[in-house]
Length: 164
Image (cartoon, rainbow, N blue to C red; front, top):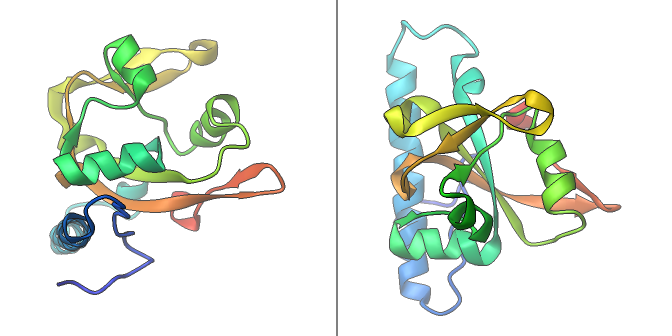
């Protein structure tokens, strides 16, 4: 099994099926490392390309665990109601957290590279006319570059340095 690397990925904390959670953790770390190796070998990508192309999804812990267990998801209840999975850019994510997840704990922040989602990803106007990424299809676990807990300090979600 791959070693836990908090700077890269967080293992799935499946409470109902511990053995599945361990497999999920190993699969996620393997996916992250494979993606990192692929990017490191691609010398045509300009510096900062990875940060510029990442989009983010905030999941509640149980939604994250379900993705780990099933390997794919149609998203959270709001995503199911709207017919697509909501994502945010690095700039939009803090406002998304404040508006839709105010003071909620046990959240997970997932990073996904837009290139890996293909034509199912659409950029559409939303809050204030800003373009937001929406996925019209399933989110596959393999598409998750990294997943980290979104901590809450003094009522404000703290986003990781990787997003800057």
